[in-house]
Image (cartoon, rainbow, N blue to C red; front, side, top):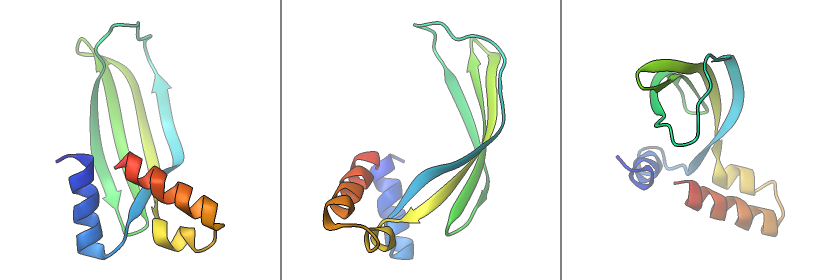
Length: 102
């Protein structure tokens, strides 16, 4: 499912427009170099998802060889709630950014 469809589904199910913001990177290991032109295959598994956060773990591979691993935590920011604490210009920029991300 494309990003725009995921965002629309979340918005319809929860009534919220959320934007995932990187909160924390844990256990990141870069095991082998990746050269320009290499095909990087990513596998990501969702560990836990709540209304305000998500934790995922991922593995990056090149030619079947593991080159990096990490556990990543995202804060799910409600764009409308966040915009209420910003200037009008900042709120417009946040909404525009959210639209570009999805």
